Amino acid sequence: MEIIHLSAECYPVAKVGGLGDVVGALPKYQNKLGHFSKVVMPAYENRFIQENEFEIVYNGWVKLGFKTYPVRILREKNNKLGFDLFLVQITGLMDRPNVYGYEDDTERFLAYQIAVLDWIEQWEHMPDLVHCHDHHTGLVPFMMLNCVRFRKLRLIPTVITLHNAQYQGQFGWDKLHYLPEFDLWNAGMLGWKEAINPLAAAIKSAWRITTVSPSYLDEIRYNANGLEELLSQERGKSFGILNGIDNEVWNPQKDPMLHKNFNNRTVESGKKANKEALCSVFNLDPSKPLFTFIGRLVGEKGADLLPDIFYNSLQYSQGQINILVLGSGDPQVEGRLEQLKEIFTKNYNTYIGYNEALSHQIYAGADFLLMPSRVEPCGLNQMYALRYGTIPVVRRIGGLKDTVTDIGDGGFGICHDQTSVWDVGQAIGRAYDLYQDNKRMKEIRKEIMQLDHSWDRAAQEYIDLYQI
Ligand code: ADP
Ligand code: GLC
Image (cartoon, rainbow, N blue to C red; front, side):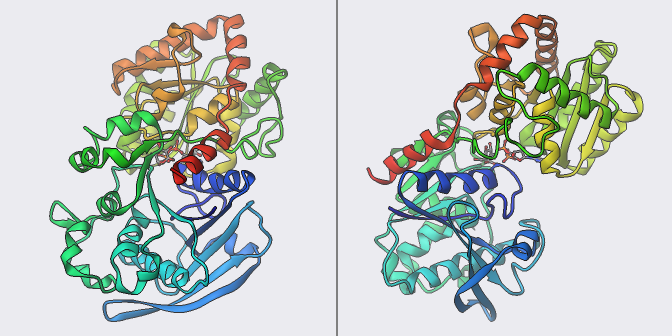
């Protein structure tokens, strides 16, 4: 099959969170299964574009209202990622360093979606399927079905994967004229609660909907930032497919970012060396258990509670644990996390910002990874932690529920029910007790490193879904 993935992120071209990891891996694994899977994404002004070789495959224009922007589509020449990668350059809109966060994000992603369809519409053959990821590509299924100028694409099946239904990309009806001409009778397909809602439009228009874990599929019926009713109506065409991880990128035996490589036989000495290196950089005590949090410092991740959770645990444990945080997001949370450094100088530290290499080093060097998420459609961190022999301490929600079993239930992780200071504090206490049992810790580390969360399974599940 020829599959086109459309996404705002794709590792290592541009990554903000797990969406980038998924789109950087899934197509590669689909190609290993004998398919032709490609990624078409915006071209941002970043290192990837400066450091790699491209050829121009398309030149055109995109019009939004009264403004017209030049478009160029570039193909990466050396198949560096294990799949064909196309970057959509839109001068005046996409030629900026960041993926998101600009006032005109609506215009940016709308222009990208129109430009992609203008290009595909000119192909001599048609792809077998267009797979859209999140709301930035959510208008594509609608436009393929309804826009006069994309008539040729009407019969191509589309899939929308919901990586996170909290973000929907809504904008006002005053921008309706940005879309290429379509029969206004169908305008209702674009809307939800008095706005144009790209995610809702995708849910209504796509041939299939997927969520990134089976549990998240259940949860969005009662927690989807206003889309619950719509998602319940469309349940019949929805499927939950658990994400995988890229075992080639996330391989502690070969990972070039680690201080020392290790496998499940050398896990004890390997983790020890990585922990010592990390502790020396962050001024922590390697003889104490090391807890970590890696991620976006936002409400969905329970980040607002972290300062209180950490304060309590560090206070009660009387210096018997270490905590290291890597993340960025809400400035208030960042500030409070930084302040704790002044109180707990010897067993607490933070790195505020984004640092890919450091994240690998922490997965390798930590003992426990905390994920007290309020919402977690899948979560990749816990799977990376498992592969690097780090025990996840997670809330039982979404993909966390589908991937981590509590030690009390014959499993290998620590699970709690609520995102609350109390629940997470209790879970840290249980983890601390487990850490005292050296034999059990060793057994669990070996066991979790061997769990198979590779994309092989999920890549095939998507292919099966496309072929139903
Ligand atoms: P989400 O996509 O909701 O942020 P995921 O668990 O799916 O959550 O994926 C997060 C990804 O982003 C992981 O690869 C994680 O290691 C990475 N990540 C998050 N924050 C940072 C950071 N500050 N520095 C480096 N990597 C980070
Ligand atoms: C989203 C979700 C996260 C998921 C990721 C990749 O960012 O918040 O849970 O793992 O997408 O699908």
